[in-house]
Amino acid sequence: MSRVWNFSAGPAALPEVVLQRAAQEMLDWRGKGLSVMEMSHRSPEYTEIFEKTRSDFKTLMQVPDTHEVLFMQGGAVGMNAIVPMNLLQGFEQAAFVNTGAWSKKTTKEFGKYALARVLADNSAPHGELAASTYVPDCTNLVERVNGQGMAYLHYCDNETIGGVEFNGQIEALSTQLDCPVVADMSSNILSKTLDVSRYGVIYGGAQKNIGPAGVTLVIVRKDLLNRALPICPSAFEFATVAEHGSMYNTPPTYSIYIAGLVFEWLLAQGGVQWAQAQAEQKAGLLYQTIDASGFYKCPVPKPDRSKMNVPFTLADESLNSEFLKRAAQAGLVQLKGHKSVGGMRASIYNAMPLAGVKALVEFMQAFEKDVA
Ligand code: PMP
Image (cartoon, rainbow, N blue to C red):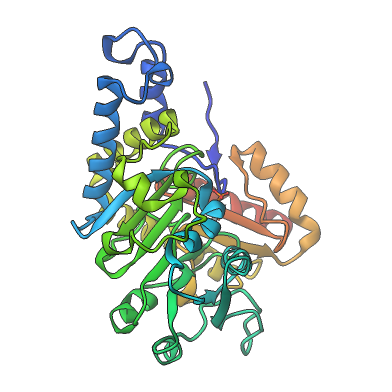
């Protein structure tokens, strides 16, 4: 068997030990004679798997008792409708920070429900910086939000396509806001420590740092469970899902089981603190390599660079396909940048070992030497 270094933005690489364990348990989960896929979600065996998964997630994220953890479906894009339907009762508008493709999509969808007020964005170039490549100034956000009757303030903590990541700016001002903060953390959840108590809602699709696609993790402050619009479908209503322990309808049982194995693995490594230290080391190595070369370039300014998704361009764009071809020959795959931005993107989530990033860096240096 030979496995490649997989830099996919998502669905992304999973820890190899998790895949091995899942393979071992595929036909016969712990002597029960059946696969997890074949278990009733209400069986004692699955209840055990589910409870442990939820409890390990709470431990990893240090979720306080004020917040509920929900396992939902519909992905992060589904959340663009699910969040407004759950939080808009009594409100006519919400505030948005737009930093790239994903937050813009959220804002657009919100327009179906109420008035979206974009109070900070990076859609125009800023000095030398191109649009969508930087974190906009958020210092006056509190003044612009407060007193306006905002249902919440939404932002995307890590823009997966542009590689733009917040560094605690919104979390820091959250206590001064008169509305809850809603954060899309699809592509950086479990990669850095944060103070969950400062958020109204945190959500993320699973297919980057959590497990296979199909399950969406939601952390919601309990006092926000009574703000759903009457049209909100029961299957997507936070209060209903919470009341039924995420089993109001059949959850994506197998995706949750794999997420549970990922959480066990992450806890054994040292939890989110370990993930954060790893991310700093891996991203640091990659950005250093890019910055030290005259051939590769990253459009994102240093303080705003994502530690999960590293976008970069080649000095000569006509070499893009040659770069990708040779990279694949060297066992480094899924490095093509998103079609909307071009160039390359290396996604280095928790499951990507330092060795994979070292292999990429060595390849990049050799490629540059060869062609430049
Ligand atoms: N938000 C972000 C930050 C993402 O990276 C993605 C997926 N790449 C989404 C939202 C959409 O997630 P999904 O496809 O699971 O709905």
